[in-house]
Length: 362
Ligand code: AHM
Ligand code: MG
Image 1 (tube, rainbow, N blue to C red):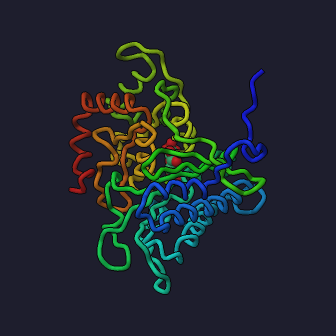
Image 2 (tube, rainbow, N blue to C red; image 1 turned 90 degrees about the vertical axis):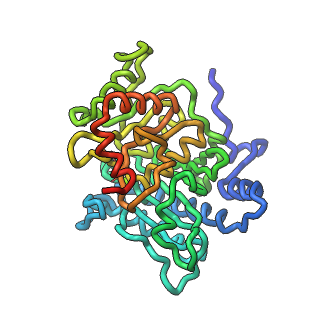
Image 3 (cartoon, helix red, strand yellow; image 1 turned 180 degrees about the horizontal axis):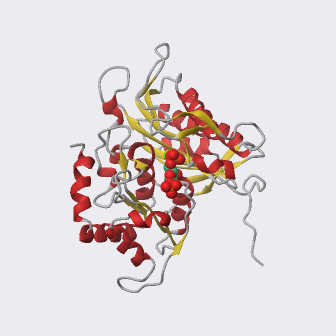
Protein backbone atom coordinates (compact mmCIF):
# COMPACT_ATOMS: atom_id res chain seq x y z
CA UNK A 1 0.00 0.00 0.00
CA UNK A 2 1.34 3.45 -0.85
CA UNK A 3 1.48 5.96 1.98
CA UNK A 4 -0.55 9.10 1.44
CA UNK A 5 1.80 12.09 1.99
CA UNK A 6 1.16 13.80 5.31
CA UNK A 7 -0.49 17.19 5.31
CA UNK A 8 1.45 19.89 7.20
CA UNK A 9 -1.79 21.75 7.90
CA UNK A 10 -3.36 18.71 9.58
CA UNK A 11 -0.26 17.19 11.22
CA UNK A 12 1.37 19.37 13.90
CA UNK A 13 4.58 17.30 13.84
CA UNK A 14 5.40 18.57 10.34
CA UNK A 15 6.99 21.96 9.73
CA UNK A 16 4.36 24.30 8.38
CA UNK A 17 5.98 26.84 6.08
CA UNK A 18 3.67 29.48 4.71
CA UNK A 19 4.86 31.57 1.79
CA UNK A 20 5.15 34.60 4.11
CA UNK A 21 7.41 32.69 6.48
CA UNK A 22 9.50 31.37 3.62
CA UNK A 23 9.97 34.77 2.01
CA UNK A 24 11.00 36.22 5.39
CA UNK A 25 13.46 33.39 5.99
CA UNK A 26 14.96 33.99 2.55
CA UNK A 27 15.27 37.68 3.39
CA UNK A 28 17.46 36.85 6.39
CA UNK A 29 20.02 35.41 3.97
CA UNK A 30 20.50 38.97 2.63
CA UNK A 31 21.96 41.05 5.50
CA UNK A 32 21.30 44.42 3.83
CA UNK A 33 17.67 43.67 2.95
CA UNK A 34 15.18 46.38 3.91
CA UNK A 35 12.09 44.17 3.80
CA UNK A 36 10.54 46.07 0.89
CA UNK A 37 11.37 43.38 -1.59
CA UNK A 38 9.99 40.76 0.79
CA UNK A 39 6.75 42.68 1.08
CA UNK A 40 6.50 42.91 -2.69
CA UNK A 41 6.62 39.14 -3.07
CA UNK A 42 3.93 38.88 -0.43
CA UNK A 43 1.81 41.35 -2.42
CA UNK A 44 2.16 39.06 -5.43
CA UNK A 45 1.01 36.09 -3.35
CA UNK A 46 -2.07 38.03 -2.26
CA UNK A 47 -2.81 39.07 -5.85
CA UNK A 48 -2.52 35.39 -6.82
CA UNK A 49 -5.12 34.41 -4.22
CA UNK A 50 -7.55 37.03 -5.52
CA UNK A 51 -7.07 35.91 -9.13
CA UNK A 52 -7.38 32.24 -8.11
CA UNK A 53 -10.69 33.01 -6.42
CA UNK A 54 -12.02 34.32 -9.73
CA UNK A 55 -10.53 31.65 -11.99
CA UNK A 56 -11.88 28.79 -9.89
CA UNK A 57 -15.45 30.14 -9.97
CA UNK A 58 -15.16 31.50 -13.50
CA UNK A 59 -18.09 29.54 -14.88
CA UNK A 60 -20.40 30.95 -12.20
CA UNK A 61 -19.55 34.57 -11.94
CA UNK A 62 -20.35 35.99 -15.35
CA UNK A 63 -16.69 36.78 -15.72
CA UNK A 64 -15.90 34.40 -18.54
CA UNK A 65 -15.60 35.39 -22.14
CA UNK A 66 -14.13 38.10 -24.30
CA UNK A 67 -14.42 41.87 -23.95
CA UNK A 68 -14.74 44.26 -26.90
CA UNK A 69 -11.13 45.36 -26.59
CA UNK A 70 -7.80 44.08 -27.84
CA UNK A 71 -4.40 44.32 -26.17
CA UNK A 72 -1.20 45.79 -27.57
CA UNK A 73 -0.57 42.57 -29.49
CA UNK A 74 -3.97 42.78 -31.21
CA UNK A 75 -5.39 39.87 -29.21
CA UNK A 76 -8.95 39.91 -27.89
CA UNK A 77 -8.86 40.57 -24.15
CA UNK A 78 -10.78 38.20 -21.93
CA UNK A 79 -12.65 39.66 -18.95
CA UNK A 80 -10.37 37.71 -16.67
CA UNK A 81 -7.27 39.17 -18.39
CA UNK A 82 -8.46 42.59 -17.32
CA UNK A 83 -9.43 41.49 -13.82
CA UNK A 84 -6.01 39.90 -13.27
CA UNK A 85 -4.21 42.90 -14.74
CA UNK A 86 -6.04 45.38 -12.50
CA UNK A 87 -5.65 43.22 -9.42
CA UNK A 88 -1.85 43.09 -9.76
CA UNK A 89 -1.69 46.81 -10.53
CA UNK A 90 -3.86 47.77 -7.56
CA UNK A 91 -1.85 45.56 -5.24
CA UNK A 92 1.37 47.37 -6.17
CA UNK A 93 0.55 50.97 -7.16
CA UNK A 94 0.41 52.53 -3.69
CA UNK A 95 3.01 50.63 -1.66
CA UNK A 96 6.01 52.88 -2.23
CA UNK A 97 8.01 49.86 -3.31
CA UNK A 98 7.54 49.96 -7.08
CA UNK A 99 8.76 52.67 -9.48
CA UNK A 100 7.05 51.36 -12.63
CA UNK A 101 5.16 48.37 -13.94
CA UNK A 102 4.92 46.64 -17.30
CA UNK A 103 2.04 44.34 -18.18
CA UNK A 104 1.28 42.30 -21.27
CA UNK A 105 -2.09 44.07 -21.38
CA UNK A 106 -0.52 47.55 -21.79
CA UNK A 107 1.60 48.96 -24.60
CA UNK A 108 3.51 51.44 -22.43
CA UNK A 109 5.23 51.60 -19.11
CA UNK A 110 2.57 51.86 -16.38
CA UNK A 111 3.48 54.82 -14.22
CA UNK A 112 2.83 54.89 -10.50
CA UNK A 113 0.06 57.47 -9.86
CA UNK A 114 1.66 60.82 -8.93
CA UNK A 115 0.06 60.94 -5.45
CA UNK A 116 1.84 57.72 -4.36
CA UNK A 117 5.48 57.26 -3.39
CA UNK A 118 7.75 55.15 -5.53
CA UNK A 119 10.48 52.66 -4.67
CA UNK A 120 13.39 50.77 -6.15
CA UNK A 121 11.68 47.95 -8.00
CA UNK A 122 10.24 47.41 -11.46
CA UNK A 123 7.50 44.81 -11.76
CA UNK A 124 6.95 43.05 -15.10
CA UNK A 125 4.00 40.72 -15.47
CA UNK A 126 1.76 38.71 -17.74
CA UNK A 127 -1.44 38.79 -15.66
CA UNK A 128 -3.18 35.77 -17.17
CA UNK A 129 -1.14 33.80 -19.62
CA UNK A 130 -2.93 31.28 -21.83
CA UNK A 131 -6.25 32.98 -21.20
CA UNK A 132 -7.68 31.84 -24.53
CA UNK A 133 -7.95 28.45 -22.77
CA UNK A 134 -9.99 29.59 -19.82
CA UNK A 135 -13.45 29.16 -21.31
CA UNK A 136 -12.80 25.42 -21.53
CA UNK A 137 -11.45 25.01 -18.00
CA UNK A 138 -7.81 24.56 -18.95
CA UNK A 139 -5.17 25.77 -16.48
CA UNK A 140 -3.85 29.28 -16.96
CA UNK A 141 -1.14 31.21 -15.14
CA UNK A 142 0.38 34.50 -14.03
CA UNK A 143 4.06 35.20 -14.76
CA UNK A 144 6.05 37.94 -13.00
CA UNK A 145 9.59 39.22 -12.59
CA UNK A 146 11.29 41.98 -10.63
CA UNK A 147 14.23 44.19 -11.60
CA UNK A 148 16.02 46.75 -9.50
CA UNK A 149 15.78 50.33 -10.79
CA UNK A 150 19.19 51.67 -11.76
CA UNK A 151 18.44 55.03 -13.36
CA UNK A 152 18.36 58.26 -11.41
CA UNK A 153 15.15 60.02 -10.49
CA UNK A 154 12.10 58.89 -8.59
CA UNK A 155 10.07 57.33 -11.38
CA UNK A 156 11.04 54.24 -13.31
CA UNK A 157 12.06 54.58 -16.94
CA UNK A 158 12.00 52.30 -19.94
CA UNK A 159 15.72 51.62 -19.37
CA UNK A 160 14.91 50.14 -15.96
CA UNK A 161 12.63 47.67 -17.71
CA UNK A 162 14.82 46.78 -20.67
CA UNK A 163 17.45 44.93 -18.64
CA UNK A 164 18.93 41.53 -19.38
CA UNK A 165 17.23 38.62 -17.66
CA UNK A 166 20.46 37.77 -15.86
CA UNK A 167 20.00 40.97 -13.82
CA UNK A 168 16.60 39.89 -12.43
CA UNK A 169 16.20 39.90 -8.65
CA UNK A 170 13.23 37.56 -8.60
CA UNK A 171 10.78 35.76 -10.83
CA UNK A 172 7.80 33.54 -10.35
CA UNK A 173 4.61 32.16 -11.72
CA UNK A 174 1.24 31.11 -10.44
CA UNK A 175 -0.60 28.19 -11.98
CA UNK A 176 -4.37 28.11 -11.60
CA UNK A 177 -4.85 24.37 -12.06
CA UNK A 178 -6.45 21.52 -10.17
CA UNK A 179 -4.81 23.33 -7.28
CA UNK A 180 -3.31 26.82 -7.30
CA UNK A 181 0.47 26.92 -6.98
CA UNK A 182 2.96 29.74 -6.74
CA UNK A 183 6.56 29.01 -7.70
CA UNK A 184 9.27 31.62 -7.21
CA UNK A 185 13.00 32.22 -7.05
CA UNK A 186 15.12 35.05 -5.72
CA UNK A 187 18.23 33.47 -7.20
CA UNK A 188 18.77 30.95 -4.39
CA UNK A 189 16.78 27.97 -5.57
CA UNK A 190 13.21 27.48 -6.74
CA UNK A 191 10.36 26.90 -4.29
CA UNK A 192 6.77 25.87 -4.92
CA UNK A 193 3.76 26.57 -2.68
CA UNK A 194 0.28 25.10 -2.93
CA UNK A 195 -2.74 27.16 -1.93
CA UNK A 196 -4.75 25.45 0.77
CA UNK A 197 -8.22 26.80 0.00
CA UNK A 198 -9.45 25.87 3.50
CA UNK A 199 -7.15 28.38 5.20
CA UNK A 200 -6.34 30.64 2.26
CA UNK A 201 -2.58 30.18 2.67
CA UNK A 202 0.15 29.10 0.27
CA UNK A 203 2.03 26.25 2.00
CA UNK A 204 5.50 25.08 0.97
CA UNK A 205 4.92 21.86 -0.96
CA UNK A 206 7.89 21.73 -3.37
CA UNK A 207 11.14 22.78 -1.63
CA UNK A 208 14.17 23.38 -3.81
CA UNK A 209 12.81 22.25 -7.17
CA UNK A 210 15.40 20.74 -9.52
CA UNK A 211 14.49 19.63 -13.02
CA UNK A 212 14.89 15.80 -13.16
CA UNK A 213 17.99 14.67 -15.04
CA UNK A 214 16.05 12.18 -17.15
CA UNK A 215 13.58 14.09 -19.32
CA UNK A 216 10.15 12.63 -20.09
CA UNK A 217 8.36 15.13 -22.31
CA UNK A 218 8.65 17.53 -25.20
CA UNK A 219 6.02 20.20 -25.75
CA UNK A 220 5.43 22.06 -28.98
CA UNK A 221 2.48 23.09 -31.13
CA UNK A 222 3.14 20.40 -33.72
CA UNK A 223 0.21 21.64 -35.81
CA UNK A 224 2.52 24.42 -36.98
CA UNK A 225 5.26 22.05 -38.15
CA UNK A 226 4.66 23.06 -41.76
CA UNK A 227 6.15 26.46 -40.86
CA UNK A 228 9.04 25.24 -38.69
CA UNK A 229 12.62 25.86 -39.83
CA UNK A 230 14.68 22.84 -40.98
CA UNK A 231 16.72 22.94 -37.74
CA UNK A 232 13.60 22.75 -35.56
CA UNK A 233 12.22 19.87 -37.65
CA UNK A 234 15.46 17.90 -37.30
CA UNK A 235 15.46 18.59 -33.56
CA UNK A 236 11.91 17.27 -33.21
CA UNK A 237 12.87 14.13 -35.12
CA UNK A 238 15.76 13.74 -32.66
CA UNK A 239 13.36 14.14 -29.70
CA UNK A 240 11.21 11.43 -31.26
CA UNK A 241 14.25 9.12 -31.45
CA UNK A 242 14.17 9.08 -35.26
CA UNK A 243 17.39 11.02 -35.84
CA UNK A 244 20.83 10.96 -34.25
CA UNK A 245 21.94 8.50 -31.63
CA UNK A 246 18.73 6.49 -31.64
CA UNK A 247 17.56 7.03 -28.05
CA UNK A 248 14.08 6.21 -26.78
CA UNK A 249 11.52 8.82 -27.90
CA UNK A 250 10.22 11.39 -25.45
CA UNK A 251 6.45 11.59 -24.98
CA UNK A 252 4.66 14.58 -26.48
CA UNK A 253 2.50 16.76 -24.22
CA UNK A 254 1.13 20.17 -25.23
CA UNK A 255 -1.50 22.21 -23.44
CA UNK A 256 -1.04 25.56 -25.19
CA UNK A 257 -0.81 27.34 -21.86
CA UNK A 258 2.82 28.24 -21.25
CA UNK A 259 2.81 28.16 -17.46
CA UNK A 260 1.17 24.74 -17.43
CA UNK A 261 3.48 23.30 -20.08
CA UNK A 262 6.53 24.76 -18.35
CA UNK A 263 5.42 23.62 -14.89
CA UNK A 264 4.90 20.03 -16.00
CA UNK A 265 8.29 19.86 -17.68
CA UNK A 266 10.00 21.51 -14.70
CA UNK A 267 8.66 18.83 -12.36
CA UNK A 268 8.96 15.85 -14.72
CA UNK A 269 11.86 16.80 -17.00
CA UNK A 270 11.64 17.79 -20.65
CA UNK A 271 11.63 20.72 -23.04
CA UNK A 272 9.06 23.30 -24.12
CA UNK A 273 9.70 24.91 -27.47
CA UNK A 274 7.91 27.73 -29.24
CA UNK A 275 10.27 28.15 -32.18
CA UNK A 276 10.48 30.82 -34.83
CA UNK A 277 8.66 29.92 -38.03
CA UNK A 278 9.34 30.52 -41.70
CA UNK A 279 6.27 32.74 -42.23
CA UNK A 280 6.59 36.47 -41.64
CA UNK A 281 4.31 36.52 -38.58
CA UNK A 282 6.30 33.99 -36.60
CA UNK A 283 9.83 34.63 -37.84
CA UNK A 284 10.96 36.05 -34.49
CA UNK A 285 8.87 33.70 -32.33
CA UNK A 286 5.63 34.28 -30.41
CA UNK A 287 6.61 34.31 -26.74
CA UNK A 288 7.19 37.75 -25.19
CA UNK A 289 10.76 38.19 -24.04
CA UNK A 290 9.95 40.50 -21.14
CA UNK A 291 6.62 39.27 -19.83
CA UNK A 292 7.12 35.55 -20.30
CA UNK A 293 10.53 34.25 -21.39
CA UNK A 294 12.88 36.10 -19.02
CA UNK A 295 11.01 35.06 -15.87
CA UNK A 296 10.71 31.41 -16.85
CA UNK A 297 14.33 31.32 -18.05
CA UNK A 298 15.51 32.61 -14.65
CA UNK A 299 13.46 29.92 -12.90
CA UNK A 300 14.67 27.19 -15.27
CA UNK A 301 18.33 28.10 -14.72
CA UNK A 302 17.81 28.17 -10.95
CA UNK A 303 16.30 24.68 -11.18
CA UNK A 304 19.35 23.35 -13.06
CA UNK A 305 17.80 23.74 -16.53
CA UNK A 306 18.44 26.16 -19.37
CA UNK A 307 16.61 28.49 -21.77
CA UNK A 308 17.65 29.69 -25.21
CA UNK A 309 16.23 31.48 -28.22
CA UNK A 310 17.97 28.87 -30.39
CA UNK A 311 21.23 30.78 -30.69
CA UNK A 312 22.08 31.79 -27.13
CA UNK A 313 20.84 32.09 -23.54
CA UNK A 314 17.56 34.00 -23.07
CA UNK A 315 19.06 35.62 -19.97
CA UNK A 316 21.83 37.23 -22.06
CA UNK A 317 19.49 38.98 -24.52
CA UNK A 318 19.40 42.75 -24.05
CA UNK A 319 15.77 43.69 -24.74
CA UNK A 320 15.14 46.56 -27.13
CA UNK A 321 11.39 47.00 -26.82
CA UNK A 322 8.49 46.17 -24.53
CA UNK A 323 6.77 44.07 -27.17
CA UNK A 324 9.87 42.10 -28.18
CA UNK A 325 9.22 38.48 -29.09
CA UNK A 326 11.60 35.56 -28.87
CA UNK A 327 11.79 31.95 -29.97
CA UNK A 328 11.91 29.86 -26.78
CA UNK A 329 13.56 26.53 -26.01
CA UNK A 330 13.39 25.84 -22.28
CA UNK A 331 13.89 22.81 -20.05
CA UNK A 332 16.68 20.28 -19.53
CA UNK A 333 20.02 21.78 -20.54
CA UNK A 334 21.11 18.91 -22.78
CA UNK A 335 17.87 19.16 -24.78
CA UNK A 336 18.11 22.93 -25.17
CA UNK A 337 21.73 22.65 -26.29
CA UNK A 338 20.73 19.97 -28.80
CA UNK A 339 18.15 22.36 -30.27
CA UNK A 340 20.86 25.03 -30.60
CA UNK A 341 23.06 22.47 -32.35
CA UNK A 342 20.43 21.64 -35.00
CA UNK A 343 19.62 25.31 -35.54
CA UNK A 344 23.32 26.14 -36.02
CA UNK A 345 23.60 23.28 -38.53
CA UNK A 346 20.48 23.90 -40.62
CA UNK A 347 19.11 27.43 -40.09
CA UNK A 348 21.83 29.79 -41.30
CA UNK A 349 19.30 31.80 -43.37
CA UNK A 350 16.93 32.23 -40.48
CA UNK A 351 19.81 33.16 -38.12
CA UNK A 352 20.90 35.93 -40.46
CA UNK A 353 17.36 37.36 -40.48
CA UNK A 354 16.76 36.95 -36.74
CA UNK A 355 20.09 38.22 -35.36
CA UNK A 356 19.51 41.89 -36.27
CA UNK A 357 16.05 41.73 -34.63
CA UNK A 358 17.58 40.15 -31.51
CA UNK A 359 20.02 43.07 -31.31
CA UNK A 360 17.39 45.70 -32.07
CA UNK A 361 19.10 46.66 -35.33
CA UNK A 362 15.86 46.60 -37.35
P1 AHM B 1 -1.12 34.74 -24.36
O1 AHM B 1 -0.08 35.46 -23.56
O2 AHM B 1 -1.83 35.65 -25.30
O3 AHM B 1 -2.04 33.93 -23.53
O4 AHM B 1 -0.32 33.77 -25.39
C1 AHM B 1 0.72 32.98 -24.95
C2 AHM B 1 0.30 31.55 -25.07
C3 AHM B 1 1.20 30.68 -24.23
O5 AHM B 1 0.62 30.46 -22.98
C4 AHM B 1 1.25 29.41 -25.03
O6 AHM B 1 2.47 28.74 -24.82
C5 AHM B 1 1.11 29.87 -26.44
O7 AHM B 1 0.48 31.13 -26.40
C6 AHM B 1 0.26 28.96 -27.23
O8 AHM B 1 0.25 29.36 -28.54
P2 AHM B 1 -0.40 28.43 -29.69
O9 AHM B 1 -1.87 28.53 -29.50
O10 AHM B 1 0.06 29.07 -30.96
O11 AHM B 1 0.13 27.05 -29.52
MG1 MG C 1 1.10 35.58 -22.23
